Image (cartoon, rainbow, N blue to C red; front, top):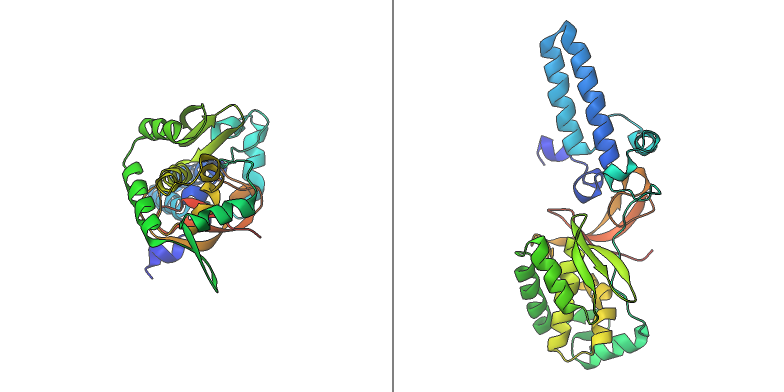
Length: 263
């Protein structure tokens, strides 16, 4: 492991980065560097470069930042700038839902040959995985507008779909959700793949989130997906979570979270 890799804190960077923490720490580094630069320009430059690198690699420099940065940002009325809504809450990624009995969904997927059961658990059929991953590979090349159009075509109900907050917003008659780009790609690919297997529309919609448990390749960048634990700065970033720690399936390269594992 290189020195740079040893300094990285992926639980506080990438998709898990807390923007208030980053901004507050960047300002602190800049102020300290300018103050020291009055007495020694070289020392000021070293502090500026070192501090900026630390914020980039680790998410923050000042101990305790996750506890005070969000409150500081809220106190000066800038919460909305960092992804908060008018009440100061962070936007959370949601999932497409359908009122389907889980046992009915599972039996339908087994009967359609989408899943098969072994003694140690459920597995995704190879031919379904191949079709699924090919569709994801195609969708990841699409820009946000193209992806939104594809989502609109895929969902089995009339909906207004548009790019929102680096993801996709879906406003339909029975649901209004926001999804990260990675999850939107995975779910649309699921709908298309299950359609090819003759799975009914309601089951396809209900299966989108459970199917993400079988993702091995990042829908958004193509990197490997692995089980990991993420700790979110300030009790929730603009990602999926409200509690500090989560077991997730996430991309090891771009940090995109694909699925949050049950406790």
